[in-house]
Length: 106
Image (tube, rainbow, N blue to C red; front, side):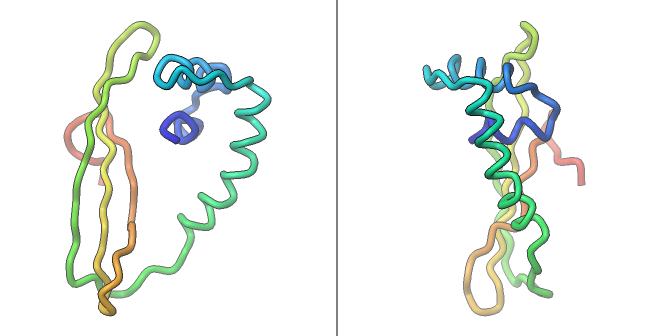
């Protein structure tokens, strides 16, 4: 999933395919990557544009730091997740954001 989300960061299908093989040992053709992203991107856009509650009494903020090799350089970005507990007691993922440093952009 991480590799698929990298399209938003400007990775080519070749780079995604290479990353999948490096990290997971899974071979995926550029055509497969392109077809897959064409199918999943509308669902991601729907999720990004969904209505949110006006109030979240409780917020959970967490991050995972991971290593990425980019043109021979190792970077350590963080993937931040903000989870809100709505007034009805249900958890909702409010955002997932990747940052190149230890604090998110917003």
